[in-house]
Length: 167
Image (cartoon, rainbow, N blue to C red; front, top):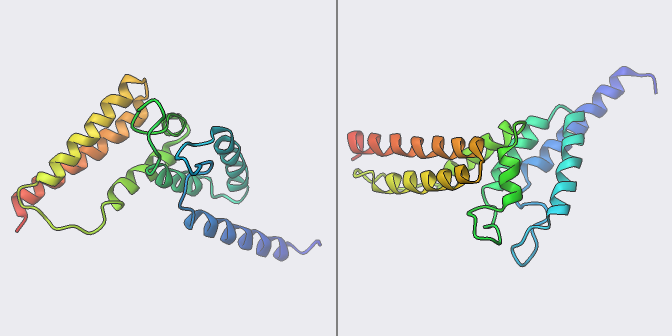
């Protein structure tokens, strides 16, 4: 009981298990079969994850993984491009990690693709993300809107690179 090495081994094992759960997590907590998110379940889940991830030093990783999963959020029932509760989490001043994860998944979700030397697909993605950023701005979600604009800007740069160097 008083063996400090045992506590260290327990902490390491707990961190490994937590990382494994986070890494393999693929769906939005509270997402129901009808595509609507049960916000109470989502909120409860997030509070538990914050607490447990903080205990083992994995809060930033948990936030990033939540951001990646948030990328797949359904539209809000009112037609907003993302579930509003998810958007509020992305907007939060303590959610830089969530926004980072969302941004990473915006690029990773595209998968392998052919380079179009005209840059057309990337310019279309730039427009899509700028439109989403404008919608987020209209809702007062300036942090989330900034992330969306950064994604759009990266697609713009990629389009220019494809034009200049694509084959």
